[in-house]
Image (cartoon, rainbow, N blue to C red; front, side, top):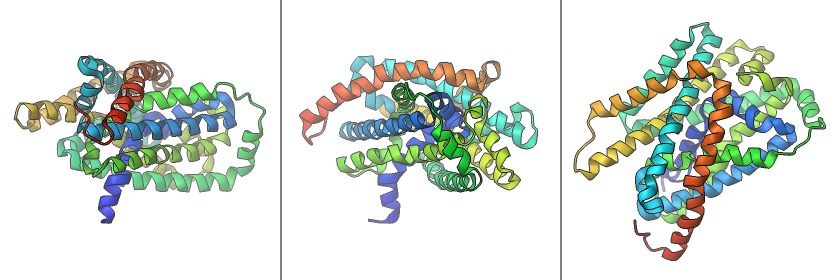
Length: 368
């Protein structure tokens, strides 16, 4: 087995899932503060570990069911799972697509303003252009982004953790020692895991490299740690600035200023921009895969003009919503509603109908 094959079969799905999860709020620290800091540093870690386990279990079942039914896009996954009610996911996903791209556009604009003093619109349009270029190049280009940005991301977060521990270990210890009630960590973990786990069905095109049901389960179990490890490292860094960090729109920027390293500040913010790119690509490419599958069922190839025009319309329209609402409000309000919808339409049917059909099949193909 070649190294490339091993990566594509076992790690690429986790890299892709991490790409969809990380987004604007995770990469800047805003989501971590919003969902995990309210229960304090210790409660926050418990919530993150719970979310990681949930991701692993749900990704493993999702990938296994997708492999069994031969699903390569979210519609071909939900048609055998929900039958004629699969349109419910279409509605939720489109709302989710607009919401998350709004968050990404807002975050990209904020990064451009923080790094170069540019108007917010410049960073936003740079992200839009990069997303359209990758999506126009197709699935292979999207997978390359997932792989290489992952290397950049893990490396930068590792350096970030070392630098913060070197300078702020006493403050981190003091943060964890604060007598903060941990009540609510369970719901924080469930909520965060629920709205992010939608990524498990958005990255189905990368499962084309799987060779067996075992590959599907192993890659799914690895997806949770691959997606959550950078978040835990980041969260530990944020604890050194608790509780003041709670009110920061860009917690990452706050900590980077405290580190006092302009060069690393630039490297980190560059990584965040690429994290926004890979997450945006994950969501938009899933939409393209859905459209492409519809063309294939009619025996036609998806026109290149459609591959570019549809994502352009969705992306440009979505990112400008953020300018009227703001990043903090979008994360605090919109995501919680999406978490409930995802639980009802995706997670609950998967853990009941999906698991039952897999158990009945006992290794045989699951009928679509």
